[in-house]
Image (tube, rainbow, N blue to C red; front, top):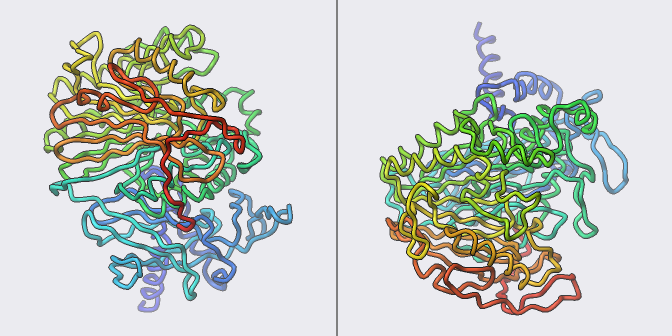
Length: 625
């Protein structure tokens, strides 16, 4: 009996060590079948199985951290024998075929597991270790490792590092930071906000610039972390060189993106709070498909026998493996929407306005139809479960006394009449944004007004342009665009890291600014628009105010630290509008309501074919992460 008990305890301990790697689990608590069977994994790697030789392993894609809580944070790395990825579920006699890009052939990698330890310390020399642990990985999860490091102090900076067991083979050093407790009277927090990084389009200089300046605490990513297309470029070849559908495809695409040095630098320096947009799965996604795949026989054949649902599962599984995010209390549609309380300073509410339970969107062939039904009361961006959670979260945030509410919604919330700019098919609005789900937007605004919820900051990406608007309920509540009276918050929409914008790269900035002037003229709540630059913005948040700083990266064809300060905005506590004069009355480019534009001086850079900005600043490059 004692022997059986001892064996049982050993088996339990083995399972605990393996399950410490979150990536073996399911992305959904209520759907464990989406995870791996831990008893089977342990059995396959037990007995005579030996761990992979530490000398054969590399930390191929750096380190990352994310989803900070007051007492814990998620840590991530990948320790693998090759840069290439696991061929999904294709196994032959206990081995997994991997593609060697040097020899241009498939090779058989050992199915032996990898043992790692990790340490978290209060100093960069890793002398004062505050917590540590062990985790295992294998080809089952593409050699990724994701652990929750607990026992940490609130709002505290830490350093962390992984090591292959029994060796001195260590990962790069990472830095992270926990969140303050919900009742902590935190004075100041900075966040950098990103969206839409397209690898073939150019280098991710925006990620690196914020990391090099090191003025923020956290990174918020609003989605389109990758793109699923088969496009590539001569300088930035993306793998695989096809439109992606399978689990291997999505793993390989994520791995390619994670080779960008500035993306690695950002992941290593800041805890990320990401959410997906549409391209992490497929363009213009909704609950039943996407613009290129709609559960028809033709789309099934086009995808090589992968159904819409299977494609979504492959994308979500790979995203879960590669991103430093937690399991949240998910239901049957793979919930990623979640919230974070950053002291009493602000609540961050991250929505999924794309894949969770969204009603049909514009798919190219049905745009006029979606326009006709855009105000239908039954249409929803989120599904009833998420909508109810969203409204409840807003009310509870207000009741608990959080000063600000930041809402990450991926797509632009404000109504944007675009007929004077780049509208197509005579559609006045972009019905793939909140404009296509007017009843859902009205329910959101009604919740805010009915419950006297103020200090609301909407965050948007997706559009590849910069937008700053007073948050208003047009046609329902009075609004004075000159003073901002009648607004109940502000929307900050950021441009892309590298995805193509509304203006081609070879167009002069002046032509793009003319489009912005038309948008400003036709949208009274839109205070600033700019569409030529790729970049990001930072929010510096205090009890008294939020300062928003928008930055442009003028050249993407090389890795560089060039940066232009485009505009700065302030929102004062309780004002519920942009401070006047908006942007201090002066911005660098685009168009500003009632203000001036200084205008960039540009010439053509013959080295990379882009217009080159003379009034940039330069942040010194870091070559290590």
